[in-house]
Length: 134
Image (cartoon, rainbow, N blue to C red):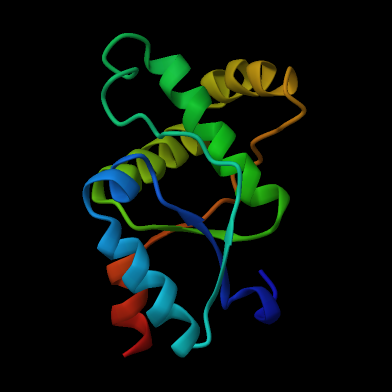
């Protein structure tokens, strides 16, 4: 990633943050600009942490890959505010990077919506970023 993009992140709010702990999103929105970090909202979907994975892991991976591919398309790192979303995204990212057979099947699904997962996505948790910037 270029240096100019190192301070711009795709904000992954997930579905829990806005409903159960909106103060975390408010804090991020106020604190990150003070640290010189810009955030952009992409058209992310719910991760969904266990709801889909327990039923069909490949569909869960396709949902995760869709979110990862959206950030890749914009050449942005994903900034997750939610622990569960962070875990889901890094697990899906790791599985897809290391299983070319599943990756091919998932990319076939993503092609239907004009996306492709290349394996370059990076996911950072909000607290990790704050620790890095201290």
